[in-house]
Image (tube, rainbow, N blue to C red):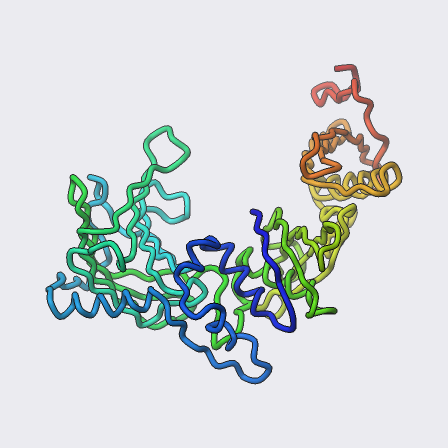
Length: 409
């Protein structure tokens, strides 16, 4: 993910805007705004923030739907779980979510569904559209939400999509948020050849970065939340600096093995400050008391795997321990050989044999984001005290885990 823009002067307004632009696209988003950046100023007031509703084309579209409501009748919505026929196949909503202004209804329990319906609701992507109603008969396209059908054919890894912006009928009513879910009911009829339709109730999981009462919600498990925190951290010491974001890389979060199954996250940010040279800052995050925060920062020549928030002990799993020891060694060797270089796109693959008390961690990395991959491997032996690194394997060496012998490739 790459984006260039300036974050300028005294406020976090640009951080919020930056995250929004990443989500929806610079040109498309700015084209929707009337009044410039004024609509964001409520987010950064020092006192209790007052959320000001932006005057956007999305709000005009809701006015247009009210006209449709007066002139046309949209189908009533059944009170049973949503189902229908989509792309010529029976469709029942087994999972649903609302994220960045997009409502997704899925046939399936996870994001890898083979069949789904997406509605681009034309609402501010950082707001949960609780209480919103959309009544559109014979959509005209200009001010109507886009509807996308996505399906995956047998044997295909990528989905095929069909988009509708007009001649469909929609009756959508969203309730109030509760327990991080947004209840709703829908009646949708599409003008495709097989007359796809779905009607009934659903409970959408609320996902993604968002603003609540004028402030970023740091409880949300989202890479966008980590991006917001990284930019806020970069501006912490000098909020007046001009900050140009070059790229975000390797954003991720997952449960960890810390006490209480604490969630941790990671993000690499490349940026320029006040027109200076490009710099890289890596951030490690932890979810503490239900909210995400920056736990540690790393330089471009430091590896996340070499600096876990809690170092693995001798009784840790071989995969975790060998990766940690290999990353420590790789980081130290690279810093010594290439003191002015960073370490990028590291990968670690481990194998071990309890029978022969041998282990190997193969690693690959770059010294420049656009450079070639460099590969190396480390040999480990299990002693009475646990796993220890023996040495770096030579390029022509390999370990035969069936015999326990080290031979030539």
